[in-house]
Amino acid sequence: MTSCPHLEQIQVVKPRTKGCEDCSKTGDLWNQLRVCLTCGYVGCCDDSKNQHATKHFQQTQHPLIRSLEPGEHWVWCYPDKMYFDKVPGLSRPRPWSLLTGWLRR
Image (cartoon, rainbow, N blue to C red):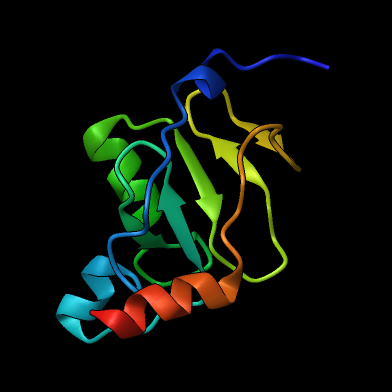
């Protein structure tokens, strides 16, 4: 299996918003959500009209995203164009723990 040097840069991040940060500001809809594993930015996927997760990478060069969809645990590395089904040591919060955190705000 090929290794990705960016996996060492994964941060323990909390998603900054409940939905796509930029779509929420403009009132647009999204298909699925991705979270940046450097800063916690939440953006919409490439199947969404605005593709904010990819635009975030292009603006910041933060290399790794993770799916925020229930049951999905994969990570994508933009610079290396590598997909990882599961990343050892990267825990995924249970969906209800994220919901509980958002409800406390």
